[in-house]
Length: 79
Length: 146
Image 1 (spheres, rainbow over the protein chains, first blue to last red):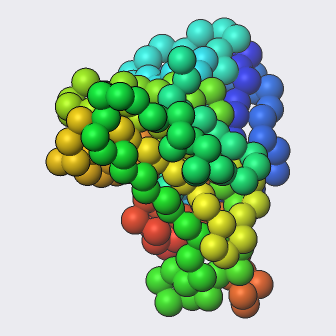
Image 2 (tube, each protein chain N blue to C red):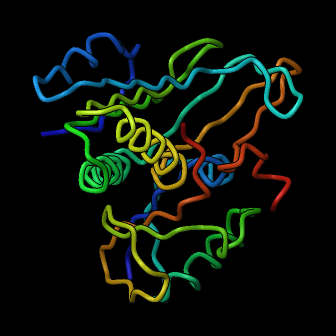
Image 3 (cartoon, rainbow over the protein chains, first blue to last red):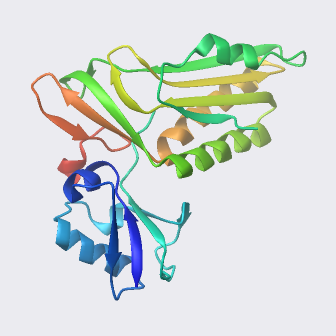
């Protein structure tokens, strides 16, 4: 399946881009993140991240669909 | 109508407060978050805020709608900066109008706490020694926690 992945904060720095097109066999967001974590050498673990799909927060149990825009969100630090 | 906004330019708190003017309001409370020159014992030179804009917008709107529903207030606004900020710059502005002060204080506290906890905005501090790092919600560095 083809996804568009958005990166922020330390994940953006590690990936070296703010977004990328990714092709993966995984429809499980945890497994997809694991694949990307290995590819980019992310230090953050999945357990510390929130998942957003197509501009909305969602549960990690959500089954991903072809064409989804996926953001793995590090712990926030606004304010 | 949008009550929450991200801003790439300087926030004009006085103009935002005038927008809250309402004959039902006997109190107007504003909170300003400024860029401080130190964090966790390190001298800070400047910082960058990065946001996931569409989700920050919708989550910010949700927080302000919740505040209006939970507390006896008339209206509320919040503007958060994105981009590069210097020491002393206004990073976040919150304004609440209410019939009475108690609800205004409670709502303002609720809004800033929820914004810091939930809105997808990230702070990257640049230190005087040349280092930089992304921070967690409690202002500890991301890299320490792994």
